[in-house]
Image 1 (cartoon, rainbow, N blue to C red):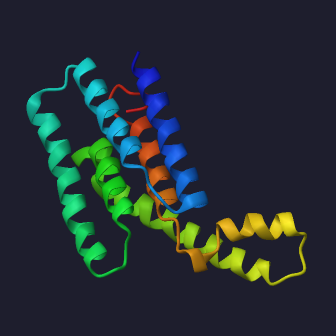
Image 2 (image 1 turned 135 degrees about the horizontal axis):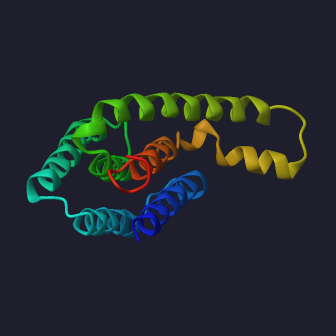
Length: 164
């Protein structure tokens, strides 16, 4: 049962990443489903209220910290909400590592966006150019990809959920 919830969460995190690449948007409904899956998995595993509260506090701290970046115009609102969900899954046990993982993945995504812009200057078939446009930094960096990567890892390592 827990593998099914973890698999569903991983698939939804991947869908969030794909949506961010294609439309530069993050769907609040998918985030609500991810939060509900975390809650369901926690309850099924018999997590106590204190452990669940600590996960919630980590999510709230991530939201608060990144809301500041949103206020400065450095991060989109959907990314802030997605980060809160990722850190809900990561919890206090993996929060610091998650910061490092998401930051490194974000760097890779940003470099990929810059590379896509550089490649688009080459004489390429239209289909390739259109595909590269999806990752263009001129459309903004889809940081939801990096966050979703972290979310997948958090789900897979959630205690009793697959690898934790």
